[in-house]
Image 1 (cartoon, rainbow, N blue to C red):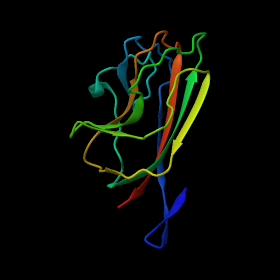
Image 2 (image 1 turned 60 degrees about the vertical axis):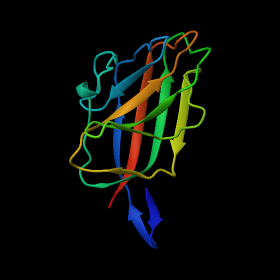
Image 3 (image 1 turned 120 degrees about the vertical axis):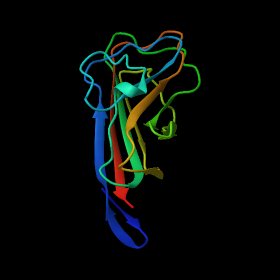
Image 4 (image 1 turned 30 degrees about the horizontal axis):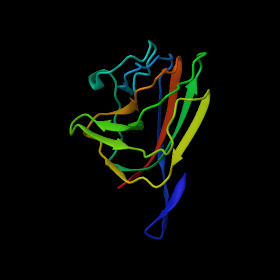
Length: 154
């Protein structure tokens, strides 16, 4: 991916993350984390200390895409407010949302993209992908998340 920055074409680097085993989010809503190593067990990781990743250099996240796959027989119904996906900086305890509009777990496949991001990152801090699943009347089952970040060197 490339974009124009200050009149020059700048190449973006990618970082991808996913959790290999599906999870069943709590009906009351919960924040989950994933990163490296890729989760092989069910993603019931609600402690940011258990998963993470680092950027190879200081830069800026300029775009992100996300695919949500609800592989169980139960897509979500009655979703409450507060859904968000982003990255969590473990050192500063800062959450940076990717701003995906209409984020939902209500059907088998959902795809989201955001190309107007400007999230500063560095090589010194650890980060984790953060998924804020809001309350649902009926929560989804067997959920997987796949996310790619596009970032450039500062």
